[in-house]
Length: 484
Ligand code: BG6
Image 1 (cartoon, helix red, strand yellow):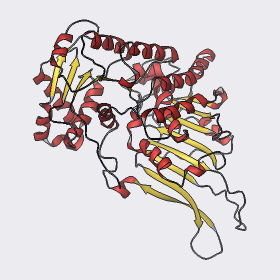
Image 2 (cartoon, protein in one colour; image 1 turned 90 degrees about the vertical axis):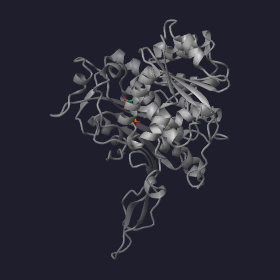
Image 3 (cartoon, rainbow, N blue to C red; image 1 turned 120 degrees about the vertical axis):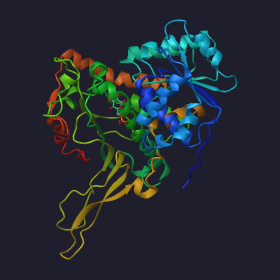
Image 4 (cartoon, rainbow, N blue to C red; image 1 turned 135 degrees about the horizontal axis):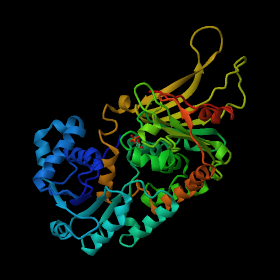
């Protein structure tokens, strides 16, 4: 087993939106875990920047509270926490005005890596980029990190790319899709390109179809305002599911290096066939006696926004011609369960007399929870009575194979932030990738609007609308069950 952690150099990381929800829940607790892991150099600094009027001590108190609330068991190490807090600072800045920028400029150290995390709405990206330049805070080595949503369609994404490009090169821009930072998502590449076993079978000669499911149990309560303008297509499919599709379908890059990987992903997106609207099912969840329906959660009684999407698509290239990819994602489903199943074709001929079952090898990569890999194989059913066949799972749960810390105990965000400091863009989306993804989803979303499409209702705790099951049934297939 190879395990070499690449050290990071000294850095100043400025978090714009440093008092916001994402900073408190994910970014700061994640950085604390990296500090505990010895990956944060002693003289590295984290500088919170936001509108609130706080001094360093008040900011450190706020961060201590956030880490206690969201940092898990590690947060109990109070001695370490107080050492970590000493590396934190705060400046009050006005993203759209002039206040605070000179203070920030004065605070930055020379000769260390400067990273700027835009943990704010996309409406402020341009203002921040411009002011970082105007006040000479960013230099040619600096990096900016931008959050999703990166636009809401091709036009807005293009405009954002153009705005950022006024001040930063593509090599300096890190567009986060936190799915790419998940351990098991990276494992997709390790499984495909680190084993001789799968690659020869990874094509339309052997694969019948591929399923990608990202099922959630949470609703949209609390962020209904954002979600209602977005919907599952923009919130999940255009980015997270698209990235999974790319990793499962791309050609082997010549090396595991940022542009080599992203070039191959881009080819997949560009080869995606437009989806016919008969091949898409939209849904909206219903209430139960304990939970509200989508429209109440979204506080929009007439909302036609989807909290569920299932679709069938094709990739127009040599490797995948004729192989359907089925994707679905939704909120308030039966279980939190994300996985990819590669369903191989039936045997052309069975030598076992009387065995009429369709035995299929299925490789399932479980992304979360219970991360692992499961390969369904056919064996002889034990016992007398002749040659009867049965399908069983060759199941490897990573935690069993590699110990309970199989995911390194880390969260996607902290892994990605450390990659920013290391200057490694492999797990970040390039501008052309994001634009290509919108080019594919825009016609789908526009079609819904033109037809005034109304999503199908589905029961909370179900697997989604009946029609999404039919999407596969009418092709003689069925979804892998959503299991806890
Ligand atoms: C976010 C979406 O990007 O991903 C949320 O905006 C979604 O709606 C979340 O719940 C899912 O992420 P995870 O890591 O919990 O699977």
